[in-house]
Length: 247
Image 1 (cartoon, rainbow, N blue to C red):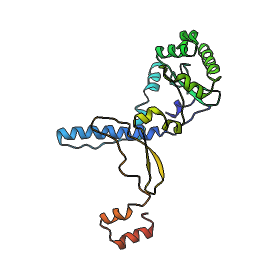
Image 2: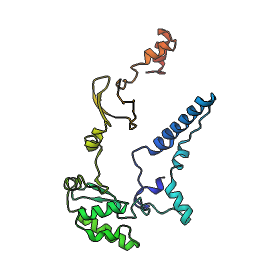
Image 3: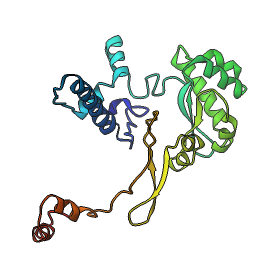
Image 4: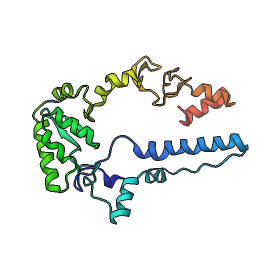
């Protein structure tokens, strides 16, 4: 998976979003657990669910695998249509060092974008046949996008249905009207009274409304309660504290 990230072999970069842990571990475990529970409800028999993070991540590498099966090899980083080979699906730097994400894989979105930027001549070059042509289109877009600031492009793109958006920082994203309207940003306070922001559950369904009922506990806040419920005497709990076994 790391081999497919970055623009070329000299600039491989990993995301700070833990894709392997979340996609390969957590989500795969959820799939297995839910399937086992569904079957147990019908048959009364349980199952052992075996999940490996590497397996879960590998199972989602469908596009590189398709390239391997079709061409006998994967494309180098930055050479796939979803990693930079197509000018209609790439990042472009603005005048103030920020970025605009162009994700117009569908022709209708590309045509709308070209119309928006007054470059209808580029509509015919949605998916250039030759690398040289692709580089020309990319250079044209970089000059155009690089001539204005991110704020200018944000205003220009507002309301446009062309799959082109400003790349926001997390701070900006937490203030974004779309995520606020979707209830994805939940402000709160810690047990010690410090303000913090929590991301809400991305799953929406009827009869369920996500809410933070209790703030995250301080380290060791509930240790004494847990030890007492587990049957430890005060003296035994003190001994565990003294040994550094619990905090």
